[in-house]
Image 1 (cartoon, rainbow, N blue to C red):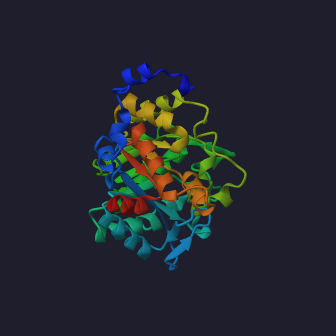
Image 2: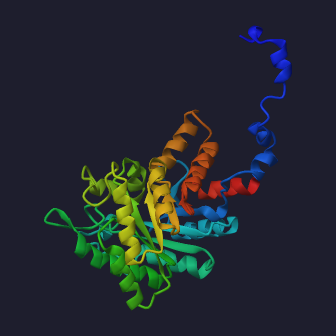
Image 3: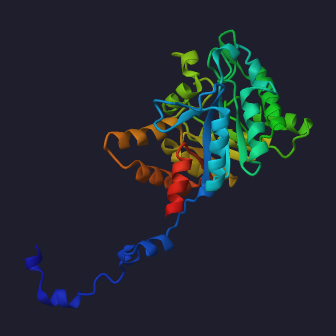
Length: 342
């Protein structure tokens, strides 16, 4: 083909093209200077699992590199996160079977595992933010996020328990409570309860668009709710993955009820939802890179299919590019170390 191009054409068009976008990609400093999206440790939230035992770390097989932590080990992890500049932790308690019940009474006890962990962290590392999950699945014998009445999830009775749970967490020192169960009306009820209890400054991070996803499997194993849930599912209260407009409806309701921050979960399969939520409401919007997403990236590394650090960084940048103000990721510690090295 090139043999048919005349010498006159080549001489005339030797400087073609005049616009060369590759110029700005030639040097690392130039690429960084013109980067449209930045990722920093300020964008990271570390989810942590805490258990009641004395064993410092109990590895979670389906989440390589992640463990259930004792309260003492959790404190050391919180110290490390604070030194790296990670702004906040999200705490998920692993409740022993003998403390679970159909009515989830353990969820709102002031001395439960979660609240003890909050107090210990706040006493020793007051500068780090604490986000607490407000949901009943760690505490129920059936593994659901709500109370099961006549074999169905009772929305309004569940909300009464959630309000008590959120107030107990705020009393312990939680900065943000995060209702994650997708019950209708929970944000407004929790806001009212917090205000009446004297915690008007405790913020609400609403899992406003939480889908009934297949990507939660490793998390449920880590939390100990997978066995309780069995073959049952949560499709009657979590969102249908086929729906997009419904997510905006859910978010709008939560905004009206007083949500301070909106959450989209999972992350990567729902980047379109994340983008629409941020553009529509202009509120602080978080995204959760869930356990299944994390596990797939680690599996790629273990099987020689990809570099986990590069895959993770690209995934987190995608969340930022889609509009996320912060990202809950199990890779927060390793990512923070990588960012500091850069």
